Image (cartoon, rainbow, N blue to C red; front, side):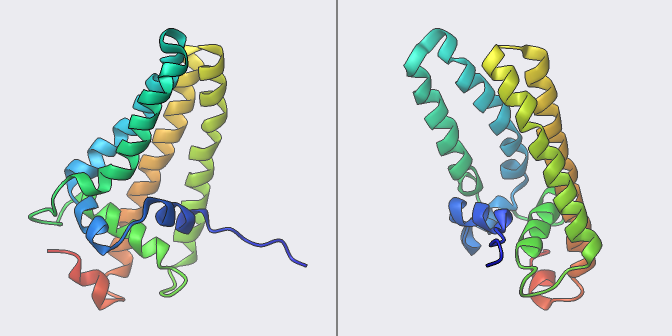
Length: 173
């Protein structure tokens, strides 16, 4: 019996309960750029256990709530002709790759950059566990840097795919 393949990208979308309305609002640059606050805020929330003890669960819960609410927090943008919106569109195109195939180099690039970002979890967790600022910042740099590079690849993916699917082209206004 073959080992089942888990699509962590699709799993993440399902966990976030992203529908068309949430995606439209997430294309707002305020949503995209404010999302960069999540990992630093989570770091501070977890570190707050040093002075709050179990009370640190409250800021951690707030960051988890912010993570879910962020794509819904801002209105739909007046224009989507910007880097932030195109990156969001590229993420949607990538998530739809089972129905509308994408070029292999985009899939490979997304997986490599996700791996780089994921590897940042190790020094980040170690740094938080040991209260080591340098290691924590190193992990954050890998995670955020990998995610930003991934997001930039999604802009490229959207640019490549919008002429191949009329639905994708309609997202740009």
